[in-house]
Image 1 (cartoon, rainbow, N blue to C red):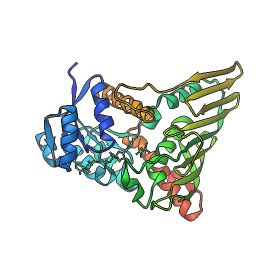
Image 2 (cartoon, rainbow, N blue to C red; image 1 turned 180 degrees about the vertical axis):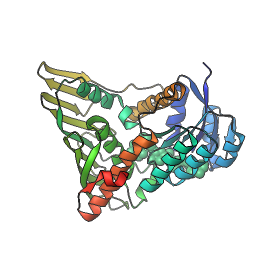
Image 3 (cartoon, rainbow, N blue to C red; image 1 turned 90 degrees about the horizontal axis):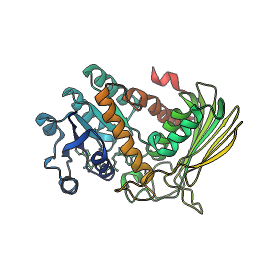
Length: 344
Ligand code: NAD
Ligand code: 89V
């Protein structure tokens, strides 16, 4: 089979992981890159040996010669770039957060549907090895029917040095990190009917909230808590691990710090090390995230070839994005927010 050719737009902090992962993906390779910042274009072009370089996305699309585009810019440009891809009938991957608003995200899904092109959101956290292991354990029936869960990301890690824009936005942790945790909650326990949320800003040097606690009702009747914090100074820093607790009718699943998975059911208790692989280009503690980047990009490549819908398609991600919008609404008003109304 011939290799799929990709173009990547946005050669910033995180795109370097995506470029490394594309080198490891079977069946696809990046043939062109674009960044409006000439310095980033040169750094990434030289590091990965990409000759075709563009400072303007319109010029990149006009020249063509690729089968898909990987949009790795920050959120402000996502809608415009996805619409450009749709205009040129080029399948697109778009980084999270998908869009600036749920309205924009819905319009992007609609535009790609009308253009007949696949659209995937690079929502990689559900692709992490430990999260996949939790899902597999639950689906195996080891703990019976789940009725309660907790998805927890509590850290004091300095994310602002790599991503300084995170300190500047009116919104921070739910939009940037909680979006992953909410997606994991959906992935494990299914879609959400309603939620309520409370937020706080502890770090006085940033604009947005850095702590959030969200209570979710799932369609299957389970209740869960998503709690996220960048203000948590622990004895052992957990970044970037999502810890998971699931209670079921027959037992419990506990994913605890250090990638330790404990499954307790009628047949006894098993404890497994579900640590992610340390890929050749990865570095601790980011290796968990880095491995999931390779997994999601391989998934995209496989689905583009086979024609099936991706796990985190644009349409799927609307249901995660709606939880973000609902959480901010609930935190501002104190009300419980119905998710169905947001998705209509
Ligand atoms: P960044 O600011 O370091 O990089 C963005 C790059 O895009 C910059 O080099 C900028 O010049 C370029 N750019 C912006 N608009 C452009 C346009 N219209 N045309 C061409 N180039 C343009 O940002 P980052 O930290 O790499 O984050 C990028 C995205 O990745 C964000 O949406 C962020 O939320 C997401 N992210 C995801 C993960 C994850 O695990 N999925 C981790 C980190 C960041
Ligand atoms: O996903 C993100 O955009 C990152 C990080 C994983 C550090 O939260 O900000």
